Length: 212
Image (cartoon, rainbow, N blue to C red; front, top):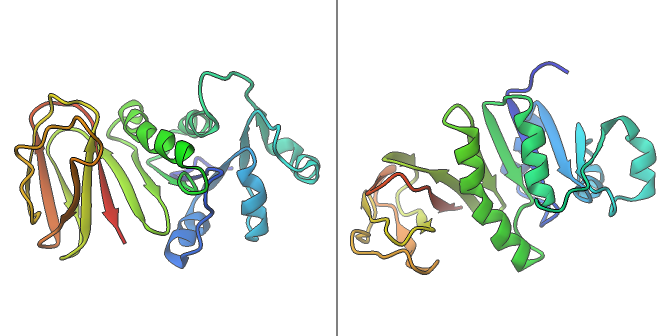
């Protein structure tokens, strides 16, 4: 396989159904599945390039079908999504799409979303990472950043540093006085144009959610 520029990681949450999201799989240079997510991918008519995890929840038929695409990682400090992320980073991609990271189990959903900032921080600015579902997309950033959007699109901002203050232009509701001591604090905003800019008070990472 040539060096992949775009890698899709498929987690074991809700498998996408929207054509625009499935297109990310079809256009990826490489697909990495988190353990049991391989079954949903194969059911969709696609094949994994690599299957990563403890491999305890994959049907035996897939273990037999893809013996050369298995990577068993037994350590329990990281979840399967993080193991798949580190596997993806070995290929130095310029873009990683994470699919199936939300839905089905709320605890997994919250855990996976919270990891996105860590992934972007470790990957650095040379690799764009997003977490995409049928309902929207999460992005992680630090510093001032301008995001493309559409007028009227719903936007939520999340941060994990209660000393962070964020000024935003291009959003309907001001965020300057928001204290990020609870996840709901800067949710349910609305874009007023085709882009908005976030200007944070420090270099802490924050998450932006753009609804479909």
